[in-house]
Length: 167
Image (tube, rainbow, N blue to C red):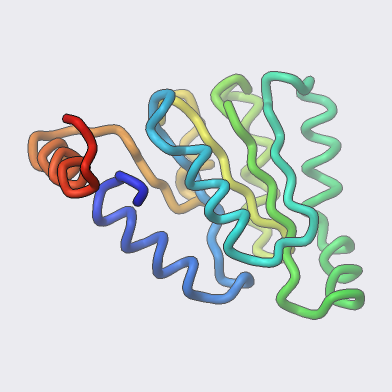
């Protein structure tokens, strides 16, 4: 019953019906109340993630975020998880309010995401795409929850009407 564009719904269904190892990193974009956290919770509930974590970027300093991310996305951690839990184990990290990290400082995450060997999955939530460095968007599947044209607006209104919401 999540009201989002049909194209996003189809992608989410496809990713959620696959294996945990194939789930992509996500960049969720949209103003407050558009469903970014709800989507992250759906993903968190869909698989048996190894210790899923919600990280509110506003309540952490950059040094601690970098240290934590470097530890969580390391290949050594992946080998340990493989030994303990098997190949399909991944950890999920939801970085909420990612726009509170300066764009120049977000570059740290690019290296982690492009390694291709990480055993962790990241979901980043931000209010505006222009508040993220281009590298994050190129390394994640982007779900842009901003309604940008009349057709998208009509799609959302139709869904709300079908779900019995007051428009």
